[in-house]
Length: 265
Image 1 (cartoon, rainbow, N blue to C red):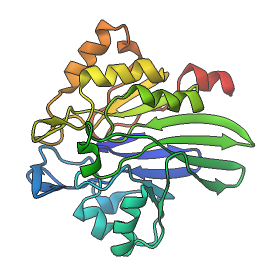
Image 2: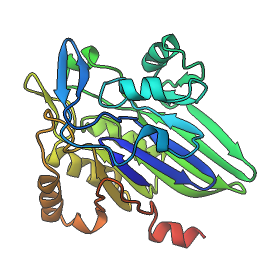
Image 3: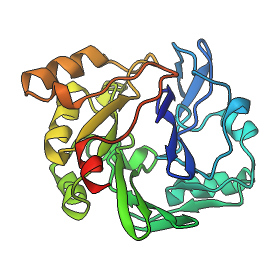
């Protein structure tokens, strides 16, 4: 995984290359959040969209301006598969992305290269509390499984912009032994309402999912992010979970596997 910024990462999984939640706005530019609301970016992405490697697909958790921005809209190839929610698919189709593919919860798509298969499954996400969730864009998490010769090599969970809910326990029930989790944090608040996990909710999700490695993203790029990364690390340390967290600077690349992966090889 290479961390580009916000929730944007480049994932090199076997022979596959994926891009997540493409946000290539620069510091000072504003992302549209809906209902006339904007937030100004505070950071720069680690690379430009024209410098991306060849991609097999984009995994888009939802349609918000800090996850699919105007740079992505105009800079990504219109033929590129984008795996996302049905709601986001409709918007992308109107913009000319003919290969946009909306998944219902628990629905799966597969990519194939030789003896390798990459499975992407849509899993639940809740972007806001109570009725507010219905006013915000539909959001999905993703389970990504890499199989080689019919044998699973790696299992990755990308949370998307979800809040913690005990009902998310269905994810590890259906998909146990998660090697790595990319967790969207930030404690984002819109009109005073929490709409992404803060430090406490992030640690609650770690305890629920029990991934071998947790990699925090989406935590300091916009003014609406109110829960710093250091708060998450401190809360995790109080629960004895700090060793399971790997932090990345923008532009840094890290492996997505640990002892479980080594035992399967």
